[in-house]
Length: 246
Image (cartoon, rainbow, N blue to C red; front, side, top):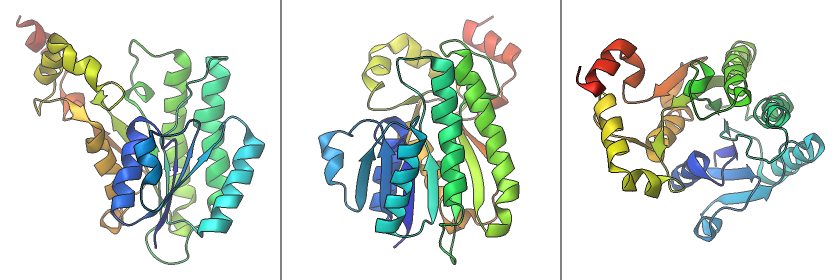
């Protein structure tokens, strides 16, 4: 059975990836800070571990235990982000970058010898652009993750491990769906901005991750796939004129 480890898989996009890959027959190991909703705890083929990713010693011990119990990996997915109440700069570096580095370098020799092997990192538009609503630490963390993806794509390629990223735009997920759906003007604005004419969902990004964790993506390496309905292609001046009707 294909073994996939998902870091940050109890909320948001990570939770959707767990459900999708488990339904596809993967043995899914999940590391998260908090327990998922009760309905998720009975997902077939999924096992959960709850730890603070900033604690390097506990992270290492958890990775060793999961590999020993569930076998070597085929896929490794990083969906985590810092949501603590401490210093957000140190927290973001520890959770987004250091934890990712520890996991990749510990597990690079714990992948199956044959078959498809991949690592997927979830980035953000704030890794390339500057926007409101997120701190400098989040911007820098995602920018660092983008370069980390490229570095490992080159350096793990000879091991047969593909490394890619996805960059989602704002999407509807269980935790925020009610807010957006009740804010009709905001939803209409997004639909006007996005070439596909609708808001994204967590399933859209989860499907992109599932593709990258499959033999169908066998020669895709070092790429950051934007899951934004084409929004990143629109020139800001054109977008501004469109949404203001000027």
